Image (cartoon, rainbow, N blue to C red):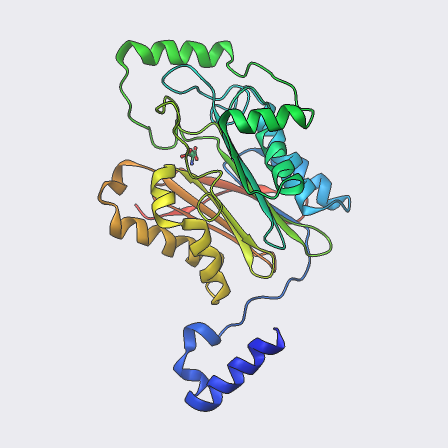
Length: 320
Ligand code: ASP
């Protein structure tokens, strides 16, 4: 705890009694014990294992989350991420991604086309520009300048699904199906440093130009290495309206457990957003001391929690 915070705590405690502020002062933020640990949304064993190999081998949390989610970005069977992701209504695959590291530094891209690894472009935005987010053709130009190559990301399978969808053009996100594979990942490395990443092709058959929560710092991902991190999956609009990931980290800062913080973030959605029964949102958090937790609106959301190299897939508790 910084000396300034100690001073404020002592001063207020002396004046008013610490018990007057139980939710603020009763539990200080957990102190990092060091990793390694890797958590990630849904059941992407390969992506989680890749990240685990990096931290277990002494690599950084940032390298781990980047390399971990890159596995999902390259997998054509992942219908909501990178190559093989479902296109928008116009048949275009547009990608959103972000990264955030221990110190609060972050980078993001959105509405990016024809680049297989948006997470790596997001990292370059963080490391090589004074900005946080680049969008669309500007993001693509930046990626090409950084040495990334263009690739057609619309697989035959995704093109067929789009053609099928075009017959009716009915836009109705299906819980746990269309949303199924967006990957958010959080890691702690052996030195106790944390990082997070989130990457997606967004909702299938979205309006061209739509950007979801996944590249938005504070919505799809937020992390403060002294406290922990959180990621979101599901209907991005619901997550953005509640600043879900930021809220979860701030609740953990006040002493809430990861699971309780995720549940509380969902309770805000339930309270404010009338249509909550018809969409899915899942939150996943990792506290700086290695404790993970998750909560979703509907059952069916699962996550990988890996502290030992034997990361198991866990079902999250759900509101409904
Ligand atoms: N949250 C993502 C979005 O709204 C979708 C997902 O998680 O699958 O773009």
